[in-house]
Amino acid sequence: MPCVYILHSDRTNKFYMGSSREDDALSRLRSHNQSKTRSTKSGIPWRLIHEEKLLDYTLARKREIFLKSGVGRQWVDQNFGQIKLERWQSGRMRRS
Image (cartoon, rainbow, N blue to C red; front, side, top):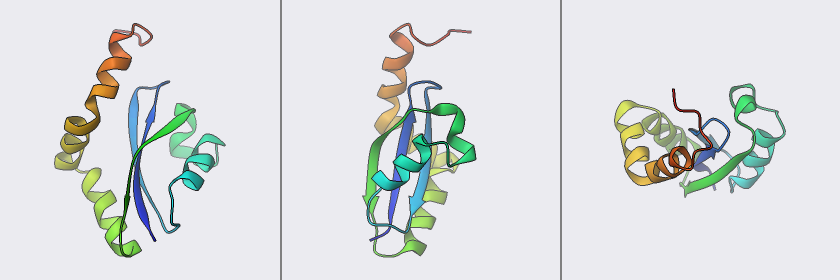
């Protein structure tokens, strides 16, 4: 069953949203952490913070596109922004 997933990088303190034709996001997480995806190479290690199973890949892609939109990013921040805030407040992030 296709899925949409959200990853978080402690290194960059950023989220990454993606979709997969496979039935779980763990295989995609492994490929992201093995530098097989150019767009996520700089954030290794990534960790899976959210996964949604959908009926077909078309729905998964539509959900991914939504999550990458302005409203979708707001939803991600409302639901998972605490992760970024905790990371920033821990003092391990550079404050510029």
